[in-house]
Image (cartoon, rainbow, N blue to C red):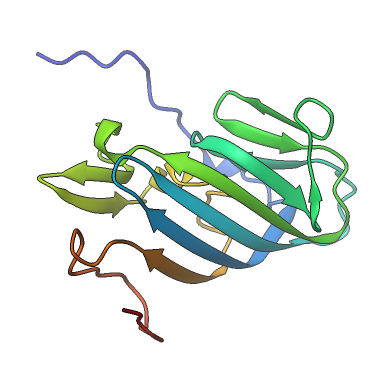
Length: 172
């Protein structure tokens, strides 16, 4: 018999609040290596309405390698803080571009959420909250960004790569 150590968090509709920021577009690049995968994300973010919150809170648990806001590298504990599966970025403008790189270890991911390895293949499972295991994001259903995804991998090791969406190109 398996015993769960954490109780799932219940979210009630009565407690709903619109997101402080919206992500208009996100470009993802997965660089798949033998043991790790580097994920580079580039997000176009805008304040939602007239709220006055100055900090941006993103959900996530991936290993953060680097983060820049409008091309400026952010320093930990000065401009951002990681805690409790979230990334808090202090004093963000109304509109900005946020780029970050995360490092994943798919073979070590046994949660079957995010990017994980099984039987020599890589898979993603992002619903309901698996995307936050890939990169930091406003991981909620009312943030409807346009996505583009690029996958870079060794063709001999990964001869077939499938993705949702419309294929716009391929390389050698």
